[in-house]
Image 1 (tube, rainbow, N blue to C red):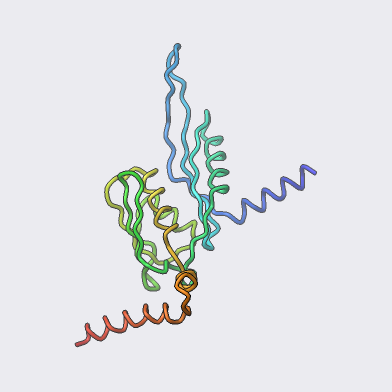
Image 2: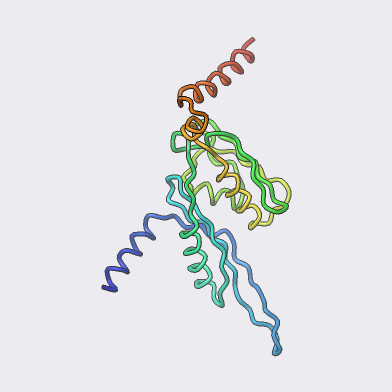
Length: 187
């Protein structure tokens, strides 16, 4: 029975992509001196629209990474992607003093983002996105701000359901805007 549980956890590990964002050494001051431990920040995703982050501390680095990875798996969110490669719309997120601005991008752009944001987009399965961080460059704030922004993204289907309209009327508005800007640019 234990073997079946081990196989199941191995399959779960294979389907998720894990990215280590950062490791910090932390110290607890006690009567005899300092006790050192390690804090790990992990991003886990399935490269198909699901991503989660986890932060954990332990006495040893591998234990901290394993605990953070498990927390990230338990805190996964689903993000709607356009054509499975980019975001549906531009979005802004913040956490503490960290702010991020995420923009959808045309095919072939790639991931234009730095540090922790790149790890999130790779785990999420986004191929084309432009991201700008403003304010704090603390990895914890950047990761949380990015998750805040990703939670705000909405697919045209959910917007259409909320407005009791058809998806075509919402998506056609997006294409009309690009055609108008192209016409204005050509004149």
